[in-house]
Length: 219
Image 1 (cartoon, helix red, strand yellow):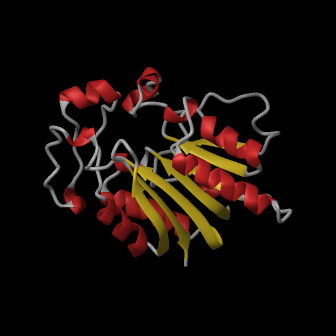
Image 2: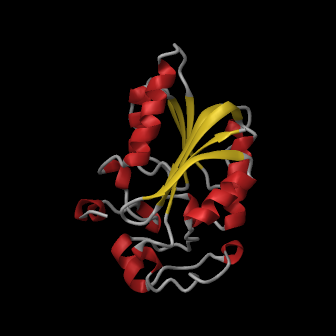
């Protein structure tokens, strides 16, 4: 994590607002897929869970997607968001706004959010998405990993993932502005969870910081 990342804390203790500072490799992957989808003459519908300030949602809209974006904290909106095909909702996963019940999505994007849920809540979120997608929809997930420095002093490191959900050490919480319980994952744990929820994992890797990036499709 660069020094610039540490200059953009989110509200309510949900870490740093990375997407307002830079795009990472996973962001670039899904933006490329959106561009490729648009060449067919269709506009894909993307759901972003944990949109923060909305920076990534707006980038996806500029790239060609219609975007539904959700965050637990109300997003400051821009006057032209609706005209650009962006809808923002305030809701906490895995319970989503009832207005989304009839929506169908081509993309799910969730960066730096699902680790704030228990494993069971994360599974419920993925299963909800699985019921609201078109055939072969794309899923792009980024969660904090047990291989990252966030695990330094993390009391739940050796707890089975089904019961792993607790605070970071005081030092890591202060450094990364994460003042919520988290479930840090290994690559194998996240891959297994996504597969168990009905997705085909296409790729999974660790970022330089030790966080997990995963690409999957519905099957």
